[in-house]
Image (tube, rainbow, N blue to C red; front, side, top):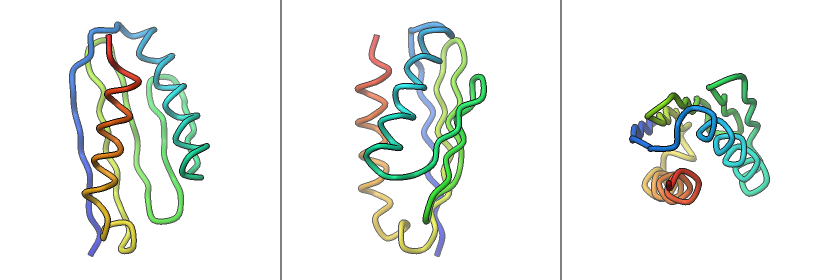
Length: 93
């Protein structure tokens, strides 16, 4: 069964700083997990084996919306923990 991960949280960085950090996060995710991340403006689209979705930033918030395929959904809790940790690292003020 496929699973969705949705995380929405506030940040105090402003739009430009958040966009810069989104780019850094995208590069880290590509390097560590081998997924494709394409950033266009305030949205980064994520695609790879077993995962698809997007990450969006604005002036005050970052939102992660991912769909996991069957194999990835078996470790959805671990994936969500990893995302939360990455957001903490990249979007702290």
